[in-house]
Length: 79
Image (cartoon, rainbow, N blue to C red; front, side, top):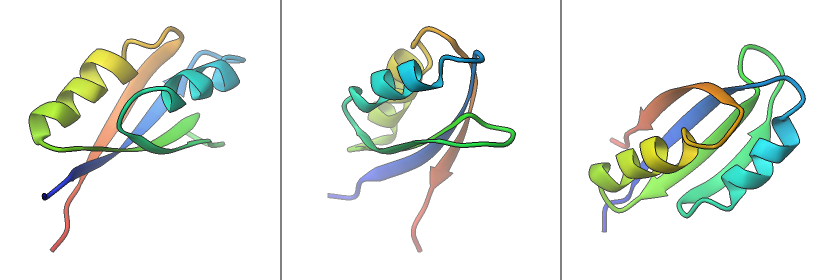
């Protein structure tokens, strides 16, 4: 099966990084998650069976976590 993958970069309210990281790691489809320093506070790699499933994980799960200000999603492709 051809899996869909994405990197999601998060801006998080100051001081909430560890709490959001723990919440992100509980979301089905999250492969890796790291606190980062710089423009974005968290970097998360996710996978799903289809684009619709990928959108669901991002929109209905990751973006709904409290103290997430904004996200930037990079859809990954393989050639």
